Image (cartoon, rainbow, N blue to C red):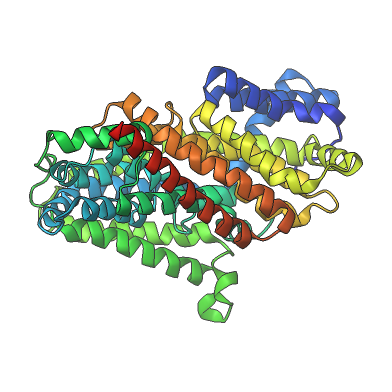
Amino acid sequence: MEFTMIETGWLSLLPPIIAIALALLTKEVYSSLFIGLFSGMLIYTFSGGGTIVNTVATTFDMMASKIADNAYMIIFLALLWAVVVLVSKSGGSEAYGRWAQKRLKSKRSAAFATSLLGVLIFIDDGFNCLTVGTVMRPITDRMKISREKLAYIIDATAAPVCIIAPVSSWAVAVASEVSQKGGFNVFLSTIPYNLYALLTILMVVFISMTGMDFGKMKQAELSAAEKATEGGKTAEGNTKGRVIDLALPILVLIVCAILGMAWVGGFFRGVPFSEAIGENPTAGLTLGAFAGLVTAFILYIPRRLMTPKEFIGNIVSGISNIVPPMLILILSWSLGGVCRQMIGTGVYISGFVTRTNLPLGFLPFLIFVVAALMSFSMGTSWGTFGMLIPIVTMICAADGAGALLVPTLGATLAGSVYGDHCSPISDTTILASTGAACEHIRHVETQLPYATLVAVVCAVGYLIAGFTLTPWIALVACAVLLVGVLFILNRVALRRIKA
């Protein structure tokens, strides 16, 4: 559907400002996005002499247009969540827990295995939290790892891993927000610039292997070492499940998704792989998700892990779980469409940036801070980058700022994940404490210093990246700084314990 763009000057800034301000004030993203979208439509229709009826009709025209443009993504997310629920109900998670209990003999090996499992289950953060918690909690309890530490490891290997995994619902969501063709390739380019995700993974692995905790997490670990927590048995579920019931559907989904992206893009007809996977990635991911669904059917039904009726019921349950985040995406797509295609927000911002001559090297740092504050306040990374990515692409369309597009998008995603990671109202934070069976407020207060330490180090990194236009110098500098600070904080914590 084609929309005619008109220039509305400073009024074009109101829709995103209204949406962001309402989200920060109300902590509710759905109505905030819709009001921002509707205000943009009011500006558009009344500037052209329209009526309120035109405004309502055009609002739903835009939403319908964005749903049509992203139909494959909607199908992919629905199939993905169907697989997630089926795998959970099959008993594969419980089987893995029983298998792992026989092989993990030390506290470090249990912590590292928890981190590794969190990294491997990268297709979706909610699936990650619940699966890792269910599988590893009996094992970490036996090794006297605190529930707070388990919740942190789960949370830190959920969204931070999903946001840099090419085969995930997050990757497709980000790629769909980038207005230019080849949005998936742009997403791949942001991975080295996603300092928060990369450094969080480094910190989780480092702390798991060394035990260099500090703050309230150190106190929680000492308390867990002194007394055994409840546990030792796997969670109740389908006892007939096997490890393959967890591993095979996910492995097939991942492999077939990559092959599907290559096939849809023409790789098997001579197109280079890097170009093929970016041609229509959501179509390829949909093929992979369907292959995972078929694999689950072949595995579960003949062995009577579930009846055909239960199988279909779990698919429906999985699809219903994706409705809330999908609504966020549709509203953010529509808000971005109004700003880009109808009221000329990009034209106005680009002109403003050009006229002010601000040091553009500060842009990644500033966007990281803004995204972090927004995401923490709203408890949603998807809603945050859904609002900011269209604005960032508009700013970087200005003369001289094109080279900053990828670094600034990386900073946008990093800030969004930081806020989501430690916000007490974030779904992922809640699911992590649920999966670990940890008191929610204890999880928040013990992991907040950890996440904030990484965020502060990242802020320094984005100052470096903004002016060097390379991620590698910033990444190495941040990694050295982070490890050095961890040594210092651990030493301080040990001195306080001895005192």
